Image 1 (cartoon, one colour):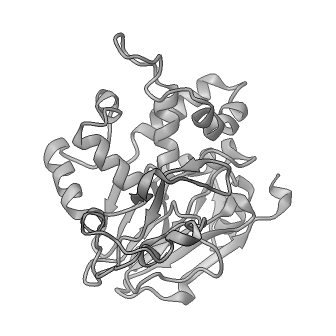
Image 2 (cartoon, one colour):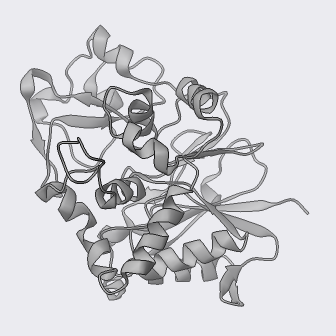
Length: 318
């Protein structure tokens, strides 16, 4: 019997909903671990932050991975949490690898609050997150949190010999001049363009941003409207602005001949479906009372709308 995979999108602390989704897909808890007789879960990252049941979500995911019933890649929220909690070496201008700004603290505060009475447990989880791969490549599909750049993936493997970080690489990873920083920015946060002329926009979450997230599968984009890929719209006067040649050079293209790719990160809405026959985003805004989504992958080369499944996140998750 072939190995089937169930790829699950960003959980963000919706631990009760995760259990409902696993049970809906036929997983049952045996000896403390959710298992399926012939399927395995792949989590696309961002298990932590924002939601009400972060410890529960982390425990379910970790127990499954440790038992060989699942795999998990690192999301930007796991990476941010690790660097936020890691003390900087002497000589750095800040005490932690990720600055404890108001914005950065707001992002991780739910996780830190829910682990406040369990500091040893949090430290163990941070060490475990650091061991998670940054990307996965199976025979017939790929998984990354935000965007797959084959050239950068190849260079990462050549430089570091695998698909993981380690404690020694963390310091290098926060240095904006390094390849490692650029790789993590692309893999964990995706591609983006800067708004022109110093413009900024205020997103629905209240954060002011000067960049907007972009698609990485458009072969010949001409305007901003061809590449924007985020819930928040651009300022109306910029929506149909022409892309400059320099901006086009910054974009990435994942072609239709590539393996099916699964990712999260982008706060999708509506009924889950493939973006392209070989592309599926699995982040459907679960923690904003959206959907916690899975795709039930077998051996197909063209992804099928009927193979998405989900659970609506109810207010009772709170």
